Amino acid sequence: MAATKKVKVKKLSFKRLFILLLILYFIGYFIYSIFRMPIKNIYIKGSNLLSDNDIIKVAEIQDYPSIFEVLKNNTTAKIKSIPLVKDAKIRINIFGKLTITIDEYKILFWDNNKQKLIVEEGVELDDSNNYLGVPTLINEVPENIYKKLTKALLKVDNEVLSLISEIEYSPSINNDQVVDNNRFILKMNDGNIVYANLLNIKNLNHYIEIYSTLDNQKGYLYLDSSNEENFYFKRFE
Image (tube, rainbow, N blue to C red; front, side, top):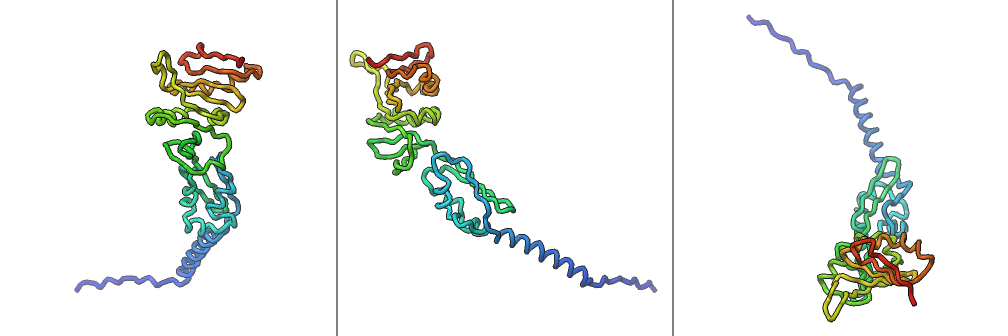
C-alpha cells in the first residue's frame, strides 16, 4: 500500500497581510496627496510676445489649483487655443512646480489690405493691437510672390524684423520690362529705406551691423544683391 503524502498548508498571516495593506494605504495616500497638492510655483518658458499673465489667465491657473485640477481640466489644450501658440507642453513635478513651455508662431507682418496679422505657415490672425514692432505690408502682392514673402521672412532675425516699419512690394522695372519681381522696399523705424530681394533676404540680417557704421546718416541702403561687395548706401539729398 502506497504511503500517504502529507501536504503542509500555510496559514494566512494576518500580521503580514496587515503590513501589506498598510504599505498599500500609505502609497495610495501619498499619490492622492500629490494629486491634491496645490501648485506652488508656475514657470513659463519660450514665450516672447505673450505675457505670462495672459497665458496663466487662459490656462485658468491663476488661483494655483491642485495638480489633479490641472490635469483634469486639460490645461494644455486651453493654452493651445491662444492663436499665437503653435504648441504647448506642461510638466509638473512632485514638489508642485508647474513648467509651461510655449512654442509661438513667428509674427511676420500686418497685412493692411487683408486687415490680418500674418504669422508663419500662412496663419492669419485678427488681432494686431497686442503686438508691437510688427511691420505693415502696405500694398497688394501677387499670390505667388506673397507666398515667397511669408517663407522668406522666416529667415530674418526677429530683432531685425522688429526694426521694419513698412513693407512695400516694388518690382524693379527697366524700359517697361520687369527686371526683378522679387524686390521689396522696406521703410525702417530709424528713417532709412532698404531695398531687399526675396532671394537674398538673409542680407537683412546684416542691417544692424551696417547701420552701426553709418554715423546716424539717413538714406537708401541697397541689400538686394547676392554679392555683399555690391551693398551700398546713398544718403538722402
